[in-house]
Image: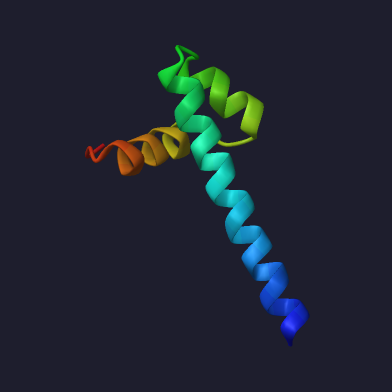
Length: 58
């Protein structure tokens, strides 16, 4: 059971870091479609991450 908890924690950390990297990329001037393409997400997902991180509504 401890292994499962560790794996879940690792997945949460990876998702958090990916979200942080997406926000940083857009704030650095990279386009949302480019970030979406590089991360395998769609533009709506990237915009939702940005909205959550920056406290805005989509």
